[in-house]
Image (cartoon, rainbow, N blue to C red; front, top):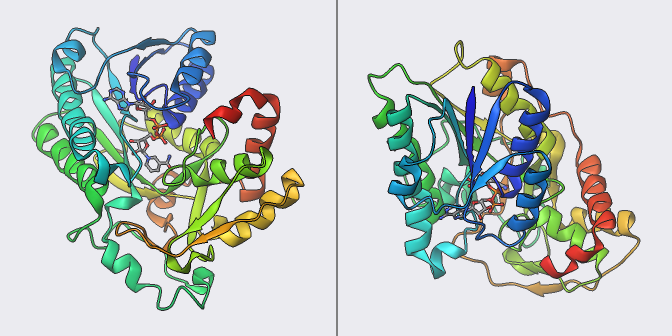
Length: 341
Ligand SMILES: NC(=O)c1ccc[n+]([C@@H]2O[C@H](COP(=O)([O-])OP(=O)(O)OC[C@H]3O[C@@H](n4cnc5c(N)ncnc54)[C@H](O)[C@@H]3O)[C@@H](O)[C@H]2O)c1
């Protein structure tokens, strides 16, 4: 089997590529990535060590994609995933995230390749998610019991990023309609782990550990600026394990959309994340408060993993403590990555 991982030098794509290379001995794995994300050239170097080729191609250019060899499966991990970039560079977000999917789907049809698409929990309505939290400035949303299922509202606004993901999901169904090709759509919540070069609006867990480790400035942004907002976080190792299961079971389980995330056991507020980072790094920062809330930010998201569990008997195994410790060890072994944070 030949697998193409788009965004293969990104955080998620590179980890999946290396994991699959180790687990599936007879499989040929290639990456497509134009290396535009900071840190992705570091990940490209890792791929090279595992003999995984990267095609330095812009996903917006179909002619280049078309000329690549034939693949049996495409794992689409390519996107501009930072929500705030949608405001500053809408054309690039639209072209990479939506035209990129369009191009990859043409390649799928051409090659008769199946697709596993990395969608996002950000497809869900910002308004409806905000309505789950009554008063963020005073009360911690950690007390909220609601977990988000696949049928949560996707109709209203969810940011340009969210739009490109839900539109990509629709495109996949259009392209694959009436074919024998198989697709899976995974709406992941926050993913983190080693080799994530996190930013304030994308990859906050690795950013938090790194800022503490390198003793750099950090701020709580939005919702009163106290760090009350809550997310569940899934360890990249758990992401890799479910992708492997999906590949192994693709003949039986396909054409489904799943929510996948850290779940109730792995939810945490930014405030509590700070406490854990202080313990691990033994460094304490003075974190500034920025009360202004971005139009696109959400105060709370915790994944309901019951559908993915029902289909695969799979659930995330790694705790937040393990996740943070793994990031800490990665940084300790790569102190020269300070410049990326
Ligand atoms: N990390 C998360 O928390 C998370 C959560 C849910 C969904 N996702 C989805 O998972 C996928 C991977 O996310 P990630 O965290 O690894 O992001 P990432 O930014 O680390 O990886 C994306 C990769 O795509 C590449 N890329 C960007 N534009 C490109 C273009 N025009 N042509 C070719 N390559 C291009 C970048 O260089 C980068 O290496 C994305 O689709 C993202 O939307 C991520």
